[in-house]
Image (cartoon, rainbow, N blue to C red; front, side, top):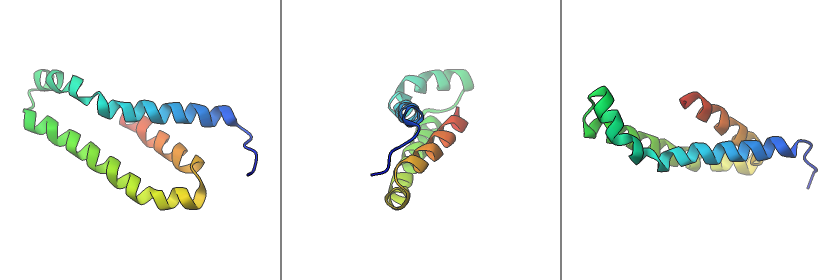
Length: 87
């Protein structure tokens, strides 16, 4: 196993990944405020959550091969970049 030069960057990326995944579990806290603030229906808010879960599952399924081929570091950086864009 080759030595990794920047362990702190990997650790920071892992923390960022876990924080962004945690936003999925905190979604229910935002449901009522989104409905009240924007006047959306419950169905519209639930559809948004459904899309997030769908793409979470699809990305896990399709990026599994990429992780096996390139290791976890590059996909981790990619996921972190995409998660930062959603905020």
